[in-house]
Image 1 (cartoon, protein in one colour):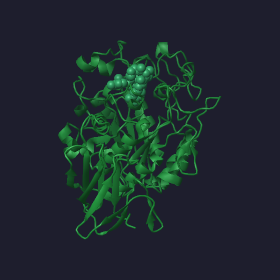
Image 2 (tube, helix red, strand yellow):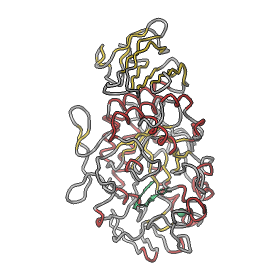
Image 3 (cartoon, protein in one colour):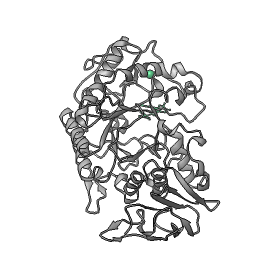
Image 4 (cartoon, protein in one colour):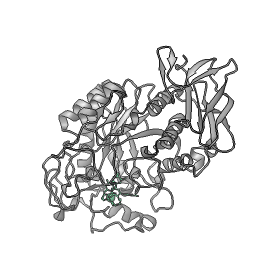
Length: 482
Ligand SMILES: O=C(NCCCOc1c(-c2ccc(O)c(O)c2)oc2cc(O)cc(O)c2c1=O)[C@@H]1CCCN1C(=O)/C=C/c1ccc(O)c(O)c1
Ligand SMILES: [Ca+2]
């Protein structure tokens, strides 16, 4: 469950948070496929409670009312169409699976597909679930439970949510029926939401009942679903990520927290020379890495002061480092604009999600940020693909916030977070030639729209990164020589 089954030569996933299925299918064909993206995490496709009293907050997608495939993103037919078109474009689909709980009382009781439920009696007819499918006695997780009591973290309720008993054969059956339907429709794997709140033994039993991936969608025979478990664990809690990392991959929250600290100036970039397991992170193959995610980009999630698109220069620097560095399996966040941390996606007066507009310069409009369409980001996806499974070599730093390194003989990156210019002759590990910097521009016809770096026969080049340049990174790689 630790292999994403990306199409060959692809390495990176993007979370198209709250996108509709029809728009995702189009994005696979017009952008993500051609640009070498490996996969997409989609918002939960199962029916959720429509919380109109809170003006459709983003977290209503995490309030399941049934496993019917009908949400504001689309219905089952649109879902099937998206998976087929994305797989055909070489882009895999990963489903955000909300299997720890069902919605509780939020003053509403109608789902996005019209299903209703009687929360006070734990009755969900559209599944169906009844009282003995949930943990008892009822209890609610308190703040200090995270430090003291691993059993309460698993058996008690997250805020206002009814806590399923995954130890029950019937509940396991309903969950695996839901996940196997998605596998048969062609998805490549799952994000397991709130995994920390479920027993590893129960999750293991569920994972073992999942079908192999559907060979009609280009997966090899016997391929197992890629599973990455959301375990928010920055250390010091009763529940540890190590209980889950033997079963499948785990979200490495320390990664984005530490990288944010380096690129927002709290730590010096030179410390990144041994970034990876030496910093207490999971083994590379076990780690799903990211700078920000849908929860912590809103400020109250795990990790404290996380960089997001709102601090563009530092964010692009951190993302470029994540994509240039071999550790982990990276996921990019692709957001909608927000001021209110509860706000859901852009919607019309009927509560329908508004599609992203694609501008003439290929950026997004209509309230969608589309970080994945920023040149400094999508060009580094291509860099990571070219770097393949090479390691890091020829690390250089200036003793503070100027660093550079090679990926084998495939690529070279440099970063400058000091407030004075970087202007140094460095080893790029590349064959002699003129290379386009993929951060400040791109190769067009036979020229570069941004910086041009001339590499000599000894692989060395004069690297210039001004403290006041628009971006703090510079990257060149094979195939981008002009
Ligand atoms: O103040 C809130 N929640 C209490 C503090 C955050 O606790 C939650 C955590 C949570 C937070 C920190 C932890 O260390 C942890 O183990 C769990 O995970 C969730 C997962 C869900 O699927 C649905 C949820 O409502 C939650 C949730 O409320 C607001 C209002 C309700 C939703 N929500 C939220 O803030 C929703 C947050 C949310 C939603 C989906 C996620 O995948 C997620 O990571 C967080
Ligand atoms: Ca639970």
